[in-house]
Length: 381
Ligand SMILES: *Cc1c(COP(=O)(O)O)cnc(C)c1O
Image (cartoon, rainbow, N blue to C red):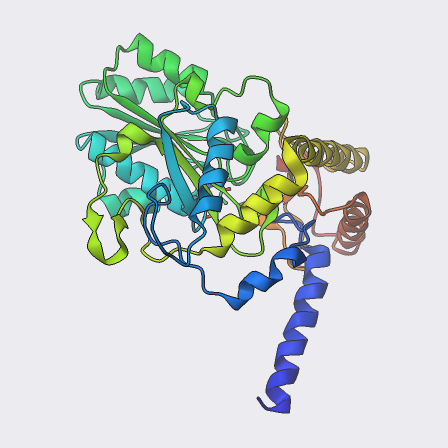
């Protein structure tokens, strides 16, 4: 490697180390230390195939993957003897997998999802060539149930496949499974499938709620979550939990990998499950709940600080995403803010301190003073 190339690498490392200090717009936890696992990087770990099928010899981490799935299955109150799933490449893959399952179960089904659903939902629908109906949302990003009811009523003879957002990407709004189930009951819909896209909130809400609405006990059929968001993981990954019975709709035996082909990807990252397992064991359920409570309280603090300075800001109940009027491009870039139309958000992830929030607000105020054309008037939201 040339000196120049070495320099390029070290510059990159320095840049990333600097950027992480002001990266508050995307939901990535940064409070981790996985140094105990660094030895694993000497090996190629590959989890191709179904983690619930034992292999006699393999460079896989199935024993960890099964425990990770068991942890989340219990968190989402999946039936003890009838759950399955795997560690995905991210929340998006879990959405694709679940919709694929729903389509195999109900080939004639129509997918209903809200206008605030993540882009991976509409992409999956296109990939799977499924008919779908987009439902409009209220001001804060929650699905409009009246519209959902009307849409289902018109097609009640066909199976209903719902994608419920458990924390929308922009405002972290949670669609109500109870309200959705009520509609299905009122309209006497016989065949239905409820999938929850819980990429961010799914990993922490059940830790701080007694009876999370969005779980298997309350009638869901599958749930997808990101592993690198709340839990914190240096590489993108996710968790999808489904009902084992439903998995029988796919899963052809493939001699080459000595397993059933029940996953979307072929080769899968074998390190991720060990890292996820490590995080779960290190924090424990209580430790994870504590982290969640700290994030929720930091979000409340942020909203209060912004409002005290006359900046309209809000945060959905128990959410850690704070929404406010979109600042100038300079501030958005510096703080890596996520924006949509005239809104921006930051996410109070574990690893972000009060001090970081204070520095951000100072920047925001200074910038709005310098840019007289820009206003943080309440009319923005
Ligand atoms: C982040 C996110 C996703 C996608 O998850 P990835 O892990 O990035 O694939 C899907 N849905 C929602 C609501 C998200 O916030």
